[in-house]
Length: 356
Image 1: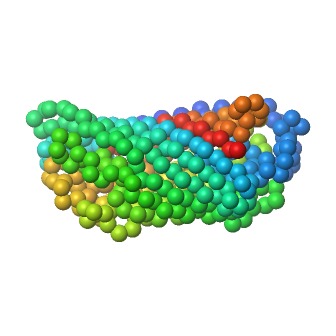
Image 2: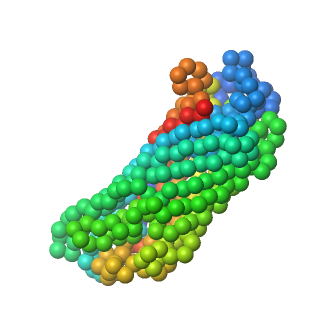
Image 3: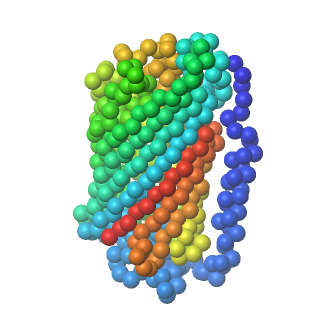
């Protein structure tokens, strides 16, 4: 089995250095600002007009979907994600299709996932926020058979519905520091019975989990204009087993970020995100584990460290006031998979949210 670096060692460093240079290169534009409290650092044209504006904090300084609102306000949002996977990893070692076919009848060569996420949020009190999230997912996986035949598997449909709540457990009066406690419930609305040509599709090609899940988390938000920073913990804890006597492994994700407003209407951000997900517990009796590695419940887990680079547009006036537009690019710094299983190459995310 050949052993290769996941990425060239200079690539993520060069990318991060370039992006960080863009952020810090803009520092002279605000060099005259003093270290005043966060809500007093804007010029007169951008001062908050009401207590409602102050309660939201400055725009562009937190990732998509993380925002506090005043009582009675709504937010609708949409996110599109494209996840590209090429090749396979076993641990941190790249494994060729030829090596996989020495032990299996089929080998995955590439996979893509497209997700359209629709979100609605409502703030019933100044501290409590409720959210509903529903994804629509499309997946494709390119396969190579032992006899040289190539084909592509496909599945699409809605994923699991998520009901979430966020509660502000602490914040300073100037909103320089906020702590948010998160909880929720995953509802198994996504299919686990996707087939192609009469054959059951593999675990990664299914659209849902088939089980109820708990969604605990915690967020810290900090800001002192023009800077913002924070940390976020999210988890998905699967409960019980589904109709086919298995459940997906739990998922845990921790991220930290720093963001800077380059102007009153645009911000840049850099994020580091670490993720861990477990193997499948039990097994789907319709899948032959000797057929291909993605059928094996013990080859589904892994861990990964990603670097995310983003730009956020947040107009202050006109038709687009109170709206934000996000563009993110993700690249894996390192990943280790219980494989062989498809490895991530890159991710692009485009998002929009409107608070009213």
